[in-house]
Image 1: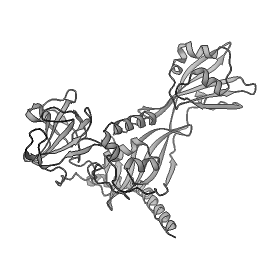
Image 2: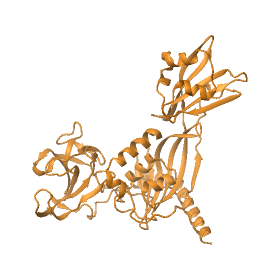
Image 3: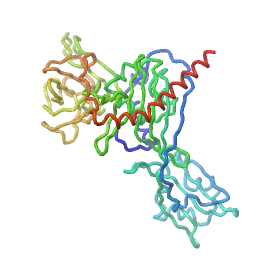
Image 4: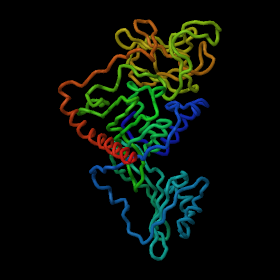
Length: 444
């Protein structure tokens, strides 16, 4: 995940759409779901810490004094006239101005859930009208909120687009898994983008497809961007702790100067494992490594990889850094990519519908890079990814093999890294102590 923040409205819609697109089986035995009876979740702890940032630009007129400010949220099917009526705005010629003046064109598109405000003076006359059409947009410096502002001017009106930087906050939250990871994150009011990033960070340590259990816990520190008291975007995860099957996994973001940053556990080992466990996010295993009855040839043969069922077009990502050794069509594999990773390791990705644009033999790819899309080419009865993990050109079971470990920090970076850990680890430990206190109170 890139450090840029994302808009929550777009993020939640896209995320949920992708997850539910995984098919009917996902809805019943959801990827990331725990197949155990659910229990009422324990109370969720959440806190905020506001960081010191420069004051907002006051030239945008955001602090106008008015006797009365009305606000309404856009509903599906709303018109501009209905919004003005709900706000109590009855200005002659205003509706015609909003619907015809080029300067007010952003109000031509009303997005359900976004807000419109109006300030009225003590005579009921409009001081200003604001439409927050873009509550959170990614920029190099973080997140900006943009809105249209309309004011009376002479016998008519004037319209102007304004922007202001969102306020960055550091949030801490925790959750306990009772049915699924996303269910626990929702209970903790953690945005979907942050949940997805947590999966990316720990993907080399935890298999989120099959390893989650009821009672697993996570504690997380992350950046959020606020405007007018509402969250308009999220940044990166700063630190997290995930307890899976009684084993604790930690992560903290560390970046030295202008060098590329990354996630490390609290001991300083990189969490960018040499290999990711899976090449597709949020799917299900349809066929494992070993002997099986071939669905097309109808005879027992050795299955040299693991099949992941997923809708056609689902992105496929490289599980490790490597070089494209083969890209093209190959017998029963259909459209296939073979990556020469490092040393004696290589990986194969078969039955693709198409390859990533511009990818060719000899290209270098990075772990997590998009290389293609799920399909059903070659000997396939339905869309899925056939994934092989090879050691010395011999396929082995990628679900059980001990994957190569990642590097650790150099001695020169240790002092700076420990300072970062010292900043966030106490926050996570505080959440753990509060959780223990809640459990003790509940047992009395």
